[in-house]
Amino acid sequence: MKNHTAQNVHLGKRRFAGLCASALLLMGTSNTALANTEPRELRLGVLLPVSGPLAFVGVAKKKAVDLLVEQINARGGMDKHKVKVFFYDTESNTTLVAQQFRRLAESDKVDIVIGPTVTGETLSARPVANELKVPMVPFAGTEAVINPVTPYLFAFVPSDRQAARKMLESVKSKGMKSVAFLHSADGYGQTGLRVMKELSAELGIPLTTIEEFGPRDSDMTPQIMRIRAGGADAMFVWGVNPGPTIIMKNAQALGYKKPIYNSYGVASQQFIQQAGSSAEGTYVAATAIMGAMQFEPGHPVRKATEKFIVDYEQRYKEPVSTFTGFVFDAMNLVERAVVKAGSIEREDLAKAFRDGGISFTGANGKLQFRSGQASAQSDNSDPIVILKINNGKFGLDK
Image (cartoon, rainbow, N blue to C red):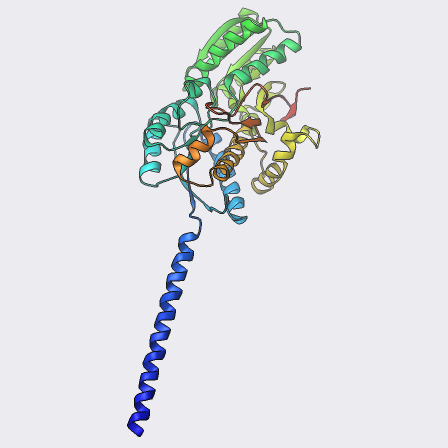
């Protein structure tokens, strides 16, 4: 009797252990299934120059990336996909960018890339993006970048044509009849010169003197003297720092008194800090975000960007710039592509851009991707404002 009872107890223990094991197995299977249904993270490649000549641009952009990714993940991600950033410093080196893009695509397995920053870098990365079929949203908008249209590049930055037109319209509205053009000897400067020539003829504001400067030039006094001798009513400077800052100081030292306009290549507070008193009274063609807080409260750009402006300036104790606005728009465009695609696979994201229908108003005006177009900018975007520097601050030129 005792043996029979002991045997029953033993069998009961075995059955109980078996049931527990089965339950654990089922729980493990269930947990695995749940884990497999969790949205995977969006792997975001970011290419920015946080060292080298363009560091002042890249550092500001990196701050904006950090802030926005933190905020996006805090609210659950892009369409429930948390964002993981894979970042490389381009070092302002055009040759390095292509290698870094390939590393992002092949080693880091990113889903999409934002950046790089300037025309030369973007043209270096573009063929790699097309070869490896990785969508890229660059921070360059020159016509050389978007023409011809390629299947994996999706631009949104205002074109040099839009900025040039706004600058020419401004001088024309002030009664000026001619302009001198001083541009950088690089892709940004060359495309700027080409569109400026076309638009100056169209608007009847001739370029009476055309000069250029190299990226390592430390004194542009001879160019400014020739411009002054040419008698133009205003001088346009088309380039990114440090060149324009040097030009402002040289012009001040020479006593150059005509109006000076800079392109959006210097549209940040750093330009004022570096140029100091020589920037006083000069004009800058900037993207809409830099005038947003001076717009009426109901203005679409102000409504879209005000929270970002406040958050960025409170965290970093510095004003937003054209460059931080580029990041704001890029991140918003990526998120809209994710939602539209219902996926974060590379080809699905590229198709979401290609097919058109992604649109919103942001730091660069009204953006809308249309089927078959490489840029979200259009004649209706209204992305550029003219700012005047007074007392060390930017103000809308009204």
